[in-house]
Image (tube, rainbow, N blue to C red; front, side):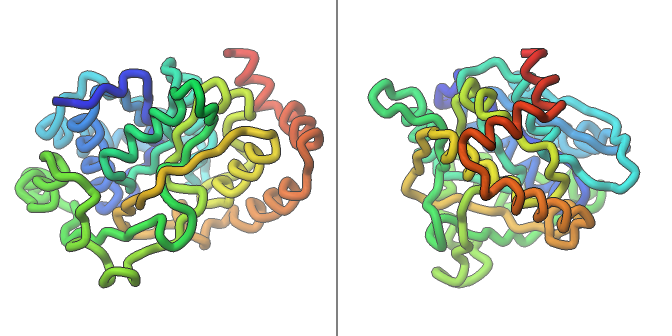
Length: 296
């Protein structure tokens, strides 16, 4: 029986740029739809509808997709950069639930972490605005190595026959992923800070100026977002557990060789010295914020 998270929408920004990404978005989406009675929005920005052509048919074999909303937008940029922050804000505006989850395609959590994060946001006495469902530091992330990728039609046809897929989409809880660590025990533990996944009160997300669309592709937007909310006085909580990161091939949109990286870092250097009043003034002057909040 699915766990009731009807008050929650998982928003997943997507570009299917590698076979690993295809595999991971299928696994994570099917996992969410199987485990929870919830809402999932996937916005894909690309030159073609890869999710609809390659991912969705597999997900439909693995899960009920009634509550999955796939939005496609043709990429108009000429530099192949995935404007993730803009895509996230698009989906926040599209969502209607009280809770919104900024959810990377490559992340899974223990079942209890999902429900704990929602409980912390809805608890009258807790007064949390944002929840990071994992520990800070080296005991916050565990890297998961999967022994297959998806590159051919045969791979897609046989997807649900892989042992890992059966584990992820059955009653299996990611809290027992030890056999899939990249490295033995502690060496497989990554350093977790502010990325991967966050649970928000939607109204707070909007009042806190959504995503900074000045950051393009791989960027320190996760760090800036946390700094901004803390500076604005929001109550931030954490769940005492791991997030499980499904490892994947790195492209310019997911690593430091992003051609926009220098500009992204310069923007972060500019923002990290601002106080509450200065941050508020900065964001109120951004055209994309004016447009978004006017539409809301």
